[in-house]
Image (cartoon, rainbow, N blue to C red; front, side, top):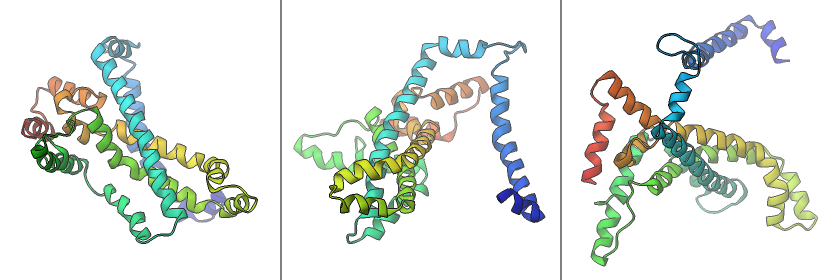
Length: 263
């Protein structure tokens, strides 16, 4: 039906073809070029030399493992937090419910560097909370650690899970839930046997979206992971690129090494 309407309207057909061409040029072509280049060595010989070298170096294997581990941990926590907030916003009525539906979206417009810097001000070694706890002889765990990365990146990425689950809940037929409740099923059982199975596609889509965003994020890991800034794949590759190019590190890396001793 959609193809038939496009054929009848040349303007929309040209617009669709242009969009497909732009998508192929700016997305598919770079990815295919990178994958093709990875199959040839410096002398132009075909083979898996690059992959063998990658997996033979412990530093790269550790970076890959850390990246996948961090992505899985943040994705799981983001699904729990985002799905819980989406369920509360879509199924419950309470004061300021409209604010709950809008406030998580603010994280979409705040840069990662600003988010990391803000949490350093609050939870850093010289942050607000540690300054308040210092007279009591207490100190929070260091934010420059794996738990700090997981904590900050979860709060920075749960919004993607929130939006995906909220859209799924809004589009779901509520008559199914009401039918389960009218047949004597408890709200918890209805959630487990009716709502959750219908939300599996939305949860899977949200998990993929969060995971891809986490493993590709550079700002937060580069700042909070300053003591071990080569521990993730993207930061390791960025460091190698700086060394190979023999150029000055980007301003973000300079800021990382400045901020870590000061905070």
